[in-house]
Image (tube, rainbow, N blue to C red; front, side, top):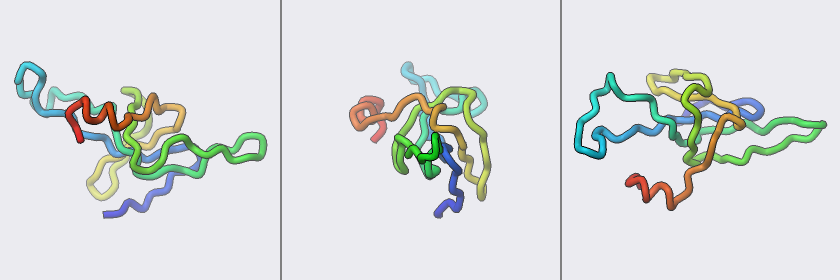
Length: 106
C-alpha cells in the first residue's frame, strides 16, 4: 500500500523497524517490556530547507535506513500503520550495508 503523505521542507517520514524478539541470552522479551526501536526506514522526504533564498536538499532519500533519538519526532497513525515524522537534523546516522549485515538483519 502506498502512503499518500508528503513531508514539508526538511521533514522525513519514517517507518520504525521492529527489534528482535529475544535478547542475546535467549530470553524472550514480552511486547509490554519492549522499547520503541530507534532504527527506521525512510518512506518519504520533503523538498528541503530554504536558506538565503536557496533550497538545500536533504542528505537522506527514500529507502535509507536511519538511526534517530529516543524522544525525537512525532508519531502518527495512517491506516493502522504507525509512522514517525521528524526533521532531518534529528536523524543521528544512516545505516550502511555493512552495518545491516553485522546486526543480523538483511
